Length: 294
Image (tube, rainbow, N blue to C red):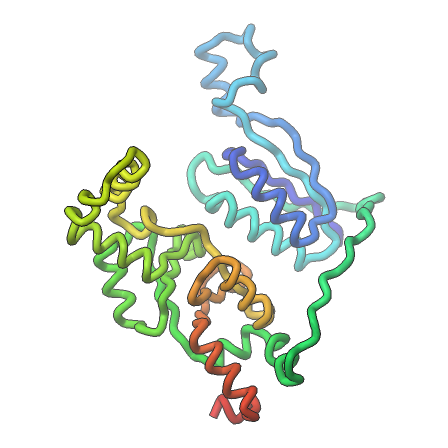
């Protein structure tokens, strides 16, 4: 059945990111409307007067955006909703917005997609078994490596993050989760070490300050107390993606590992670059996946 997705977005600063993500996953088209929340508008008008109603959409105080998209694919609809929740930081928070899904009895003209650009063609593998390995799904690799992710909440102190990392010494990237246990950031071992070193030996950093930029960096470090303060944007891989995609993502972002997330962006696993390379060597030396798993 065709469905209409209506997303009322209170934080319009995340709109560009959401539109980019929807385009990447294949949402056929999105209509954007200016809108205003009724309660916020009433409070605003009570202060400025009814004569200002014509300027309602010019004030940032009550501005929202309503996004409308129509779907025939249930899986794509679920993915679009999950991406909207991730980008917006969840819709269960006060004044965050709302998501509605409505049935559509008829839809005409959904797909007016421009010509597809040329698909990226992978270069031929150096060895025949590399083709098998790079196209292997993360779900298989994750089960072979069997690494438990290190997961902390956003408000976890850096000391407790370090303790959590000690329980999983092969995991060098911490997954930081927020509302509904969704992945919201990453914290690398090197970043954690720098921040802890600063708090242990701040005089070493003070001795290196020679300009305003370094002074601002010092000031920023004094405020780093929790995982949220130190984390970087989330990067992940999903079970259905391939080893090739995981390698590229780690290389592009200079990460020693990646969390594995499900369709709701909850962390369900972890792949480590070093162990992944080890698996490559085992396969290239003639072992098949069944032998490696044993």
